[in-house]
Length: 142
Ligand SMILES: [Cu+2]
Image (cartoon, rainbow, N blue to C red; front, side):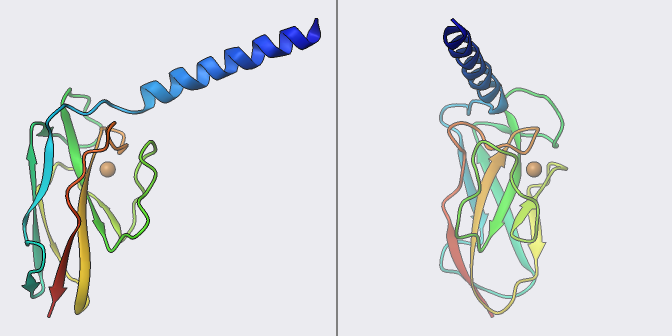
């Protein structure tokens, strides 16, 4: 009897966990394209490096603003292991948030090769499902 109860309880917990996960990610708008307008893959550039963010199919809104079909930009710099796609994106030198709704940034990068990739996040900095990401580009800084 107690075995049956504990089985029902764990089923219930599983159900809650599933529902919680389902509301933690925002569905992507189909056909949305995120891309880096500038620089282009393979470009040789000088500091400051102006990176311009392109988004088609959804709009840009500041973090914390609950508006359907919008998100804000995150720039991954030299990130080799992708962050979790169902959690808020980390915030550090390699994971830059543009929670004000910015669509470009001027970076100062060390000389040599660097990779850049955009990830769109929802109002809570969580990537959409499926994730909306740009191609990863490689640039050379003089
Ligand atoms: Cu963010």
